[in-house]
Amino acid sequence: MGIKDNPNGIRSRSPISIFLVMCLCCFFYLLGTWQRSGFGKGDTIAREIAQQEDCDVVKNLNFDSHHSIEIMEQSKVVGKVYKPCDVKYTDYTPCQEQDRAMKFPRENMAYRERHCPPEEEKLRCLIPAPKGYTAPFPWPKSRDYVYYANVPFKSLTVEKANQNWVEYQGNVFKFPGGGTMFPQGADAYIDELASVIPIADGSVRTALDTGCGVASWGAYMLKRNVLPMSFAPRDNHEAQVQFALERGVPAVIGVLGTMHLPYPSRAFDMAQCSRCLIPWTANEGIYLMEVDRVLRPGGYWVLSGPPINWKTYYKTWKRTKQDLQAEQKRIEDLAESLCWEKKYEKGDVAIWRKMSSDENCSSKKSVNLCNSADTDDVCWFDMLVISRYKEMEKCKTPYPETGGAAELKKFPERLFAVPSRVSDGLVDGVTAESYLEDNQLWKKRVKGYKRINRLIGTGRYRNVMDMNAGLGGFAAALESPKSWVMNVVPTIEKNTLGVVYERGLIGIYHDWYV
View 1: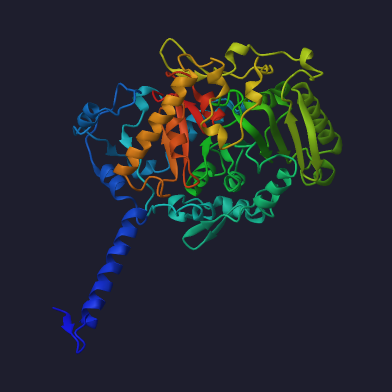
View 2 (view 1 turned 90 degrees about the horizontal axis):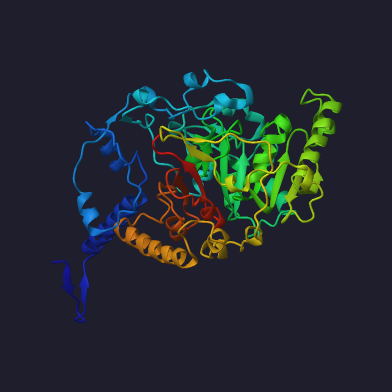
């Protein structure tokens, strides 16, 4: 229709047809981009599911992998679905209800730990999204900006206004990257740490941030290919962890209180406390002993904030010189008893390194050692088959009998290398051969997932959870700067979380029945 012959016999298209073709191309390009991004007001699939009604609770959870054709066909059967909860539950977090928490003692932060409701009080509905919820910005923009509607809490913008934590601008929160002990920005603070700690060469991959605030330290460690695990309690600082997750930074609600942290021994390459206000010298140093438990041999601990640099800040902190000096001396003594070497102290920052072995530890005979058989066993089952975390003990976690745990390969080599827990036969039923087979199996599965859902790996899904992580094969196959995976090892399953961490991945123990 739009093709004509010119005098030279050459066929050409009319300007109108060319214009229409260009318009159609632009339209379908924009449509495809929008569909792939998933961004916009909410998520269509999630919204449709939330609007469905009449659902019963799943009574029996099955943690087996479901990949066979038969099971996939069975999964197509339409069952009942959950009703949406009342809008008053928009900010609800199971086991973290304020009214319930206040019934527990405040001593040792027990009231800030998990306290789950009895069976008859559990919700049987879907938590609604906040009004006006918008799909988060893609990473890395999400590191710096979060929609206000997604986390509608402004208190930190006032309380921490002079510390560069967070600013409210129009319909978004902006995170300048500052913190109480690094008001000039996390990058400059991390640069100082990197002058002592080998962050750049892959030696440090997993890092624990105790009392993380809005997780700016973790957000900027990600830029250096370090995978952080940040935790903070649900307290008067509203939604600290929710801010972190909306930013695309790994974080969980947690506190150093009376129970073990839900991580295996020797999990982290470094840990840090940036004015986290944890009383490190209380209870005979039990909190520092817990950090020692989760810190691998050769790992680093960073302390910035009280009592470091007390000569400068004692008036600001409204404490006496003598009190702060005695506290720092006590921390120094505790660190020495745990076989930590002090490597650095300048200004507001002090850094210790846990010795690679206890051979040269002068105080190893004077410290009460924990039962080595229980170092990874942070949960147990009572007669009701309900798992609970074990209480912390005032003892030092012994070094592993083999040196393998101190000789991890650098990342990314360690992602697929056989972990020492496997090669040393510490995981029942798992051999080097079965571990390598599991890796290949998950590479194949993830490739199949991506064929079904082409948004996987594009950055549309930033925060990912594997509810039954096993050896971490799914997370390893999915490994990308565009996303991170929270590897959950159910407490009724084989304890493989130590293997997950040795691979340079992160995760947590959890009981899905509570």
